[in-house]
Image (tube, rainbow, N blue to C red):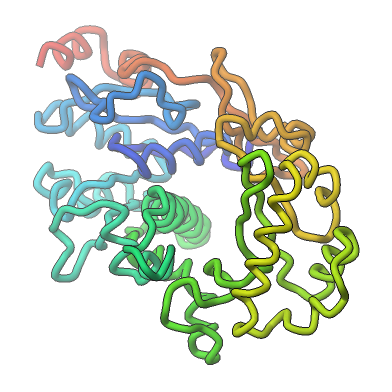
Length: 373
C-alpha cells in the first residue's frame, strides 16, 4: 500500500501533464477518479496511455446540471481535485473553487496552467515550449550558433507543471489535516520552470555564468560535462565535474596528470574537449562501459528510452514494470515501508461510471436518466 492510500483525488481529464500528475497520485496509492467527458477523449490519438494506469474513470457531462451535480457529490467525498483548463472555464461551468468549497470546505483544489491564473497572458493559448521560453530555461539550452534546442516537453509540462502540482497539492493536503480548511493551488509552468533554474540564477549572481549558450560548466561547454561519440557511433555521457572525479577518469584511461591543471580554466575547455572527442572515438560504447561504468569517473552510456529497461542497474532496482504486457516506468520514488505499486492498468473511459454513481447513492433509475441526458 502506497503512502497516499486513503486519499481520494478527482482528476478532470485533460492531456499531458494533468494525467501524469494523476498517475503519480495513483502510483502512491491514492484513489484517483478521472472524470472524462462524453465522446472522444484522446486528442493525441494514443492507443496506449500509461498515464491512465491505476485510475478509476467516470463519464460526466459537466455542461448539464445533472453532470455538475454528480461531480459536486463526488467532490464531497474527495480530498483533492485538479484541472488544467484556462482560467475561468471551471467557473463558467459552476465548478470553480468556491463552488466546490461550498460542498467540501476541506478539499484542496489544484489548478495547473502554463501562464498561471493571473497576469496578462493567463488566458492565452500556449505549450511547454512557450512557457520555458518565458522562464529563461530554453534560452540556455543548445549550440550558440543555432536557435535553442527543443528539450522535449519535460521542463514545462512535467517538471514545472505536473510535479509542482503534485508537490503543491500534497503540501496543501498536509496543511488541511491541521487546519480543516482546503485551498486553491495555482501552478504556473512558467514559474515552475523558473524555479528549476534556481542553480543557474545562483551561478549568474556569483559571476560564474556567461550569457552565451554553451559557454558554461553545465551547458555543454566544459570538456568534463558533455556527451561524446564512440567508435561504434553510439554516445556516452561524461560528467566528472569535481577534481577528484576527473582524477579517477585520468587514472582509468591513462591520461597525463597535467590534465587536471586546466580543469576549471574555461579558455582551455575547447582544446581539452577536442582531445576527449578524439579519445572517446577510439573505443566502442561497450568498451568504455567496461572501463568506466561503476567508477567515480561519472560515466554512463546514452541509452534510447526504449532500451533503458535492459540496463543491469535498472533491472536490479526494478525501475521498469510490465502491465498488461506493456513495459513502462515503474512508480517513483521508492519508500522503505509504504510500497508504491500500480493498482491496475489502463481501463476504458467510463468503466467505473455506474459503480461510482452507486457509491454516491444514485439509484439505477437515476443512473439511467443521467446516462440518457
